[in-house]
Amino acid sequence: MGSDGRVLARDEVPTPSTTSEDVLFEALVDLIGTVTQDCASYDVCGVGCGGPMTLNGVLVSPLNIPAWRAFPLSSKLEDTLGVSVAIDNDAKALALGEAWYGAGRRFKNFLAMVVSTGVGGGLVVDGMLLDGASGNAGHIGHVIVEPEGARCGCGAQGCLEAEASGPAIERRIGTKPSKADTNEKVRAGTMVGRAVASVVNLLDLEQVLIGGSVALGFGEPFLDAANRELARRCQLEFSQGVRISTVELGHNAPIVGAAAIGFRSTEKAVRGSRSD
Image (cartoon, rainbow, N blue to C red; front, top):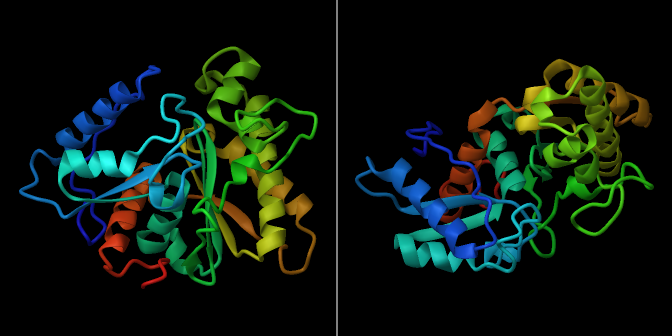
C-alpha cells in the first residue's frame, strides 16, 4: 500500500486449520510474497493481528488462532522478510486506518470495532489511539453482555465475543453465519449495541465505526438493532445521539489499518498516532 492510502495489491487466504505454528506462519509468508511480488522494494511490513499480545506484538496469542500462543511473530517476520516489522492489534489497526483515510477523519473521539471471527475494538480518544498498559486497550469483545451466557474462549462467561462473533453464531444456529435468519441478525446487533453503550457512556465518544464479516454481512437488520439498543442504553446527555455506522474503508479497512501501523513506526504522519 502507498503512503497516500491507495491499496496497490491485495489477496487473502483462509486461515489454515492446523495446530502447527510453523504451518500457519508459512501460509502468512506465502501470502506476503503474493501481494509484494510486483513491488520493487518496500521499507516496512505493518501487521494487524488478533489479540491479546505483548506490547508491540513481540509475542502474539490470538484467542481464535490456537496454533499461536506466545508466538514471536515480530522477530520471525523480520528474520524472514529482512525489513522492519510493526505489529498491533487488528482492531486498533482498523481504528488507526479509519482515522487516517476513513470516516474517523471527522471525529477526535471514536470506537472502531470488528465483528467477525472475533470481536475487537480500537479507541481513538482526544485524537490519539489508546494503547493501554500492555498495548491491548479496546478489547470490547470481552465486555460482558449476558452474565449467564456462553463461555468465552478467554475463560469468562457472557462476553460479547461469545455471543455475537461468527463462531458463536455458528454454534447457536448449527450452520454458517451467512445462513442466519433475521432474528439471529437482530440478536447479534442487540448484543453489540449493549456492549457499545457501556464504552460510549464510559469514554464520552462521538461515533462508533463497525466492520468485519458479520457486521458487514448481516447488514441493515444487524445495524438497526445495534443502534436501537445503543439509544436505549445511552441516556446520559453527552451520550445520547451517538450512532454506529459501518467503516468507510469497507473491506479494505484492515489493510489500510495494517499499513498505518507500519507507516506510524517509520515516523510518517498518520492521524491518530501519537507522533502525528
